[in-house]
Image (cartoon, rainbow, N blue to C red; front, side, top):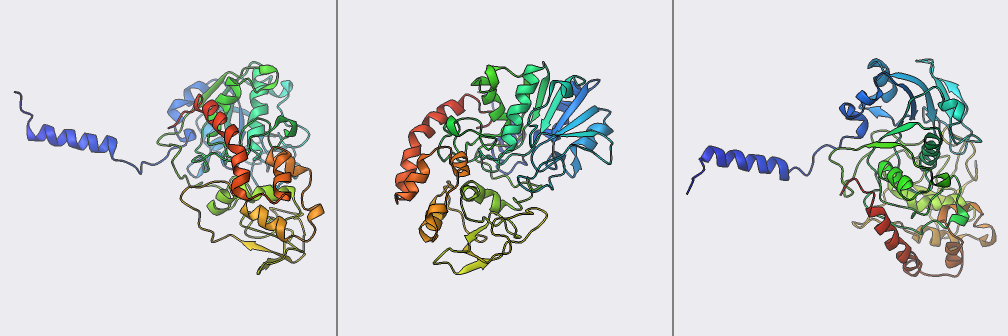
Amino acid sequence: MKVLKPALIAGFIFFMQSVCCQPDLKIIPAAERTDNYFLQLLNKKVALVANQTSRIGNVHLLDTLLRSGINVRKIFCPEHGFHGNISAGERVKNDIDPSTGIRIISLYGKHNKPRPSELSDVDIVLFDIQDVGVRFYTYLSTLNYVMEACAENGKKLILLDRPNPNGFYIDGPVLDLKYKSFAGLNPVPIVYGMTIGEYALMLNGEKWLKDGVHCNLVVIACENYTHQSKYKLPVNPSPNLTNMQSIYLYPSLALFEGTSINVGRGTDFPFQVFGNPIMQNCSFSYIPKSLPASKFPLHKDTLCYGTDLRKYSFPDSNKLTLKWLIFAYKNCQAKDSFFNNYFYNLSGNNILVNQIKSGLAEEEIRKSWQQDIEKFKVLRSKYLIYK
């Protein structure tokens, strides 16, 4: 029998420990893995779809590309603009990047999709935007329309994937396409548990792009990411998601955007509080003000009574919760005007309104989602890049 030398045994143990026992490996977004996509961009005319989250460390991706000799011809930007400083819902105008002189084309407003003329002088489109894993976060719709435009105009799309900070669970009603809008185009749950790269693969695979067109898509994957990862975003993804507390609360609290409730816009803690002037049984109060991140907040300059969730401790099994929505409806004096039509786009159906008005308990409402969620999980599994 061959006997291994102690040095070989020690070396083997060290190797196995290094491979199997590194739960805290640093997550590396695809943008930082330049060896995987730079060669595809050399000697090509590139259009960049980006915003303030498109970074390699502390350096913007645009600067890195230009310093490396990549020919970036133009920039497309989503809601909130290229610099991420335009308030929610505000029109994003075309611009010129002052530091580089490169043209910036808005994809938010009346013009959501790159025109053929805007793609005629480029070879490749490079997409790098940080998503938050929620159906009504509009960067998903921007991706959808960019993929359609690339497919229709014969352009290759390279997508640099980024971790999903809400990628560790799936929850909420699946969108009924009768209520599709720029705040949700495809039949997925509110929280769908996929990175933006995996989502792009699903758009192609399920033929959800207009007329079933197929985008020539290359997804550059993140490194060391799994769907159990709790990834802390290094850059705010939008002006009113200012910390991880707001990002974790967003799937539940953003439903208030379709009601008479202010959700902290016009404060220093958006998506961490909620209230309105006629809420009862509340000890917390605040006054929304006009701020750069929210110029015209609901109930501006009016004392609002509500709930403060800045110190809310999340349960171990995270899930979208309706308890705050149910509480607000029960304690709002003007129930007839509590919901508006936008709520149907956010919830994805016309059922949730009636369930809440009928006084159903949260767990009863949640049961009505489960069959569709299980079907979606099967569909989702075909496109996962990460465990």
